[in-house]
Amino acid sequence: MAEDTEQPVVERRGFLPIETNAFDRVFIAVLLFVALHLFWMRLVESVLPLGVATVLSLILGAIIVARG
Image (cartoon, rainbow, N blue to C red; front, side, top):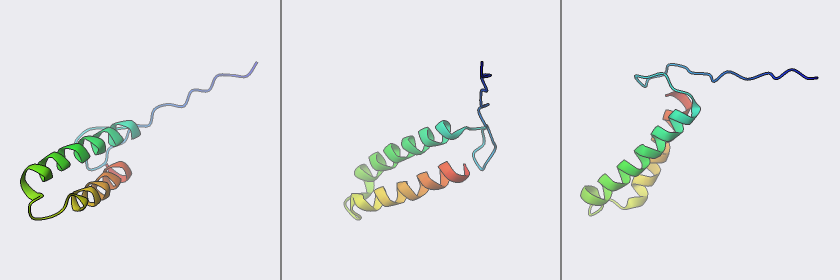
């Protein structure tokens, strides 16, 4: 029979102040996406369109997932 080889969850330290795995970083990026959009709709949308917040949050999310 083949041996069960479990891959350990790889936790690492990036610029975030906690040890995270890939799921944690994606979850933090999604929370940032939602929070930034709510903030934007409340305070900034009269000056800049919501698309700017989307692009900004996608860039920040990609940075968090890749290097967080």
